[in-house]
Amino acid sequence: MIYIFCAPSGSGKSTMVNHLLAMHPELFELSVSCTTREPRGNEIHGREYYFISVDEFRRRIRNNDFVEYEQVYEGLYYGTLHEEIERIERAGKQVLFDVDVKGGIHLKNILGEKATSIFICPPSIEELRRRLEGRGDTSPEMIEKRLAKAEEEMSYKQQFDRVVMNDTLAHAFKQLDAIIEETK
Image: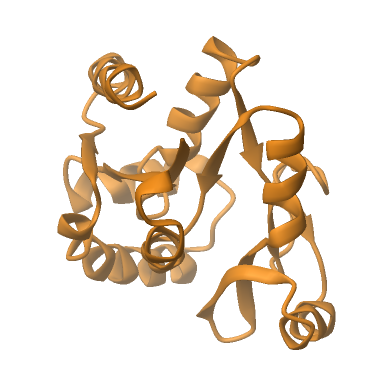
């Protein structure tokens, strides 16, 4: 099974993915996406993302290297490489995707029943604002853009196989663990 995790920025999807990786390192591996954005905080190339230039990303699009990709904002791309999925499957592990909402829908359409798509839902836009501001690594202008985008992304949650409400981590982890148990 392949698991696709999507959520508005700040909703906790990376926290959910990291929970699974910590609980079952022998079973799961994160598919590392490519992005044209700059690293944040302690992010490392090849661990959280493959950080590449816009020119390199566009070259890889022309070469059909991506399973899927999205231009999230002008000049800001995210995408999943074919070679990344193949690498994880060769290692005998299940693939976890931590991708944007439209990329997740696209991946689910490509992978079909081989994948379970999971939408991580924040309890409210106000709580999402608090979380984004609490990160301390995002400008006020970008927070406003992300909140506007979050409202749009929330309208897609019905297109996912499962929805996890991330009101508290304990509750969200319990929901997630039940989904994994049912689908593995």
